[in-house]
Length: 321
Image (cartoon, rainbow, N blue to C red; front, side, top):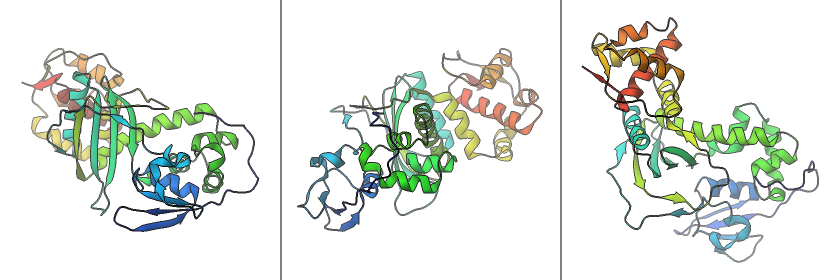
């Protein structure tokens, strides 16, 4: 985050509006600067769309310096990328592909398209990974923009966000810089929120009811202002907790509740939740899921045990005998 002068902005608001002309001739707007930034961030407006700012001539968005900076970071693409077949988005497939990425220390991008319902305009997400760790997450969901995320968390009010949006141009269109300059949040708060926002954008995939996901190998962002460097195993645990109830998880495991599990591979060095390491250690000798569930007395604890079993199986660390 590049900070501008830290002062509480109360002067006049910037009112220059823009009109967008899409490739099919559809015109959108007039939009405020803040609305344009939102549209670019969520891919509603793209690099080749034409934009007229302040009643000026139409130009490609990519050629307008004050707006093009908000386009998603360019990607360095392999001329012949490895493009496996698309897979449906569901928790089992997500565990499988994330496990493959961890084991192979993969570098590339997951392209997801879908959502939690049958909306006409599906959500698009790009999850960039480096060496099997989440590096950057792009989402077209307006509800996942930083400002909206902070309002939901109670870190800023709706009124404060509206003021920040109104004065956004003075701070280069960067929401984090604007909120810091307003004295609403500190740099550490913003850094933490951006990281947790990336985590939650990824966890949200486990809630999708419709959609597809595919991995393209050896693709990197040319720039990233704030690399997330997040480990995938904790995200897999959070995802399972977000998409299933305890009853659903028990129903899934019930046919094998008394079948022995055993270690079938090493636990790779990574940021594993404590419960995963405990379950792994208990399975040095064959043990049933029922016996593992006895490790915890409360429902949240048992849910964590069930998540550990599923994640370790996806990682080929556990197998049923």
